[in-house]
Image: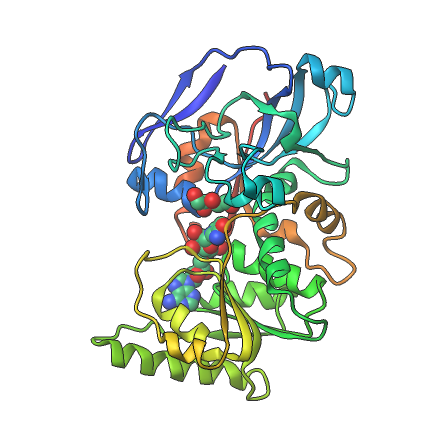
Length: 374
Ligand SMILES: NC(=O)c1ccc[n+]([C@@H]2O[C@H](COP(=O)([O-])OP(=O)(O)OC[C@H]3O[C@@H](n4cnc5c(N)ncnc54)[C@H](O)[C@@H]3O)[C@@H](O)[C@H]2O)c1
Ligand SMILES: OC[C@H](O)C(O)[C@@H](O)CO
């Protein structure tokens, strides 16, 4: 079978691989759709994602759906999954034995293997393959009403659900979402579904904000200036100023919850100042690993800064949400898939598109999907 493999930065090769039949607790999946994520793009462009460097050829892709084409003996006996089922793939496979797995927070299992990520070695190959075997426990049946592309989008949606669950706000809360990329927009959509009253989005790119407002992802949008500070003091002053501008959109009040979805240091600073006393900040974005932050402006006002790492037990809720997208107060999530490429051989072109803010015709690029018929 065919697979896309990264051998160096921008050196993507279509290779042939052999595939074994699935083990007794596995299913074999024919990949139908993979949406590309910023981390895939980082690996494609730099052969690394922050501190994680690729050590051997790696197939990118971890936002994936497909069709079951073979099942292992135990799976066959249990009859939960069968050949022909359409499924979304939860691509992180935890150890199942450690304390974190037992308590259900398997997303922070230290032995978790995550497809397409160079965090573990040997790497766990990503989903830009015609077929792959995966533990049956970590696939989720898709209803007919959810397309393969939407099925792939369940992965970043799971991140957003996890973040909003951790935020634990009461109905009627206000929230700020910094960063109107796919993850920020999904956080806004989930926040809306979970009963937030007022959602403000911030970004430095106007057309992302226009898109968000047009499709009902937010109640208000603020274009932040691109800040270049020469000193920490100046950077903190900018952050206070930006926080004030943002609070003006919330009746001059700081926000109950802030979802930081850029990872950019200046945005984390702004998030601290923009969150009310006793509020919470969810750090979803992954940016510079070491940052200079006004920590006492958080601690002395009991603003909790909460880490968010992937998701645990979020796919079932994601499927429910996806089924209602476009109605019941949930924005139409499939609008996030702005560009589609057909066939594994188009992966390079798909990555080139994912690297752009707008395509040649000036249309916004948010999520790029690579679909594969066989
Ligand atoms: N914690 C997790 O488990 C997890 C999972 C998935 C993604 N992520 C991270 O979430 C972040 C968002 O992912 P995405 O796919 O939406 O990325 P993206 O690149 O599509 O979106 C980022 C957005 O932030 C905006 N932005 C950049 N600099 C800004 C600034 N200074 N001020 C305001 N806005 C700014 C960009 O214009 C863009 O719209 C990334 O850092 C990604 O690595 C984290
Ligand atoms: O949703 C999962 C994330 O996209 C990945 O963990 C990635 O961003 C980090 O390698």
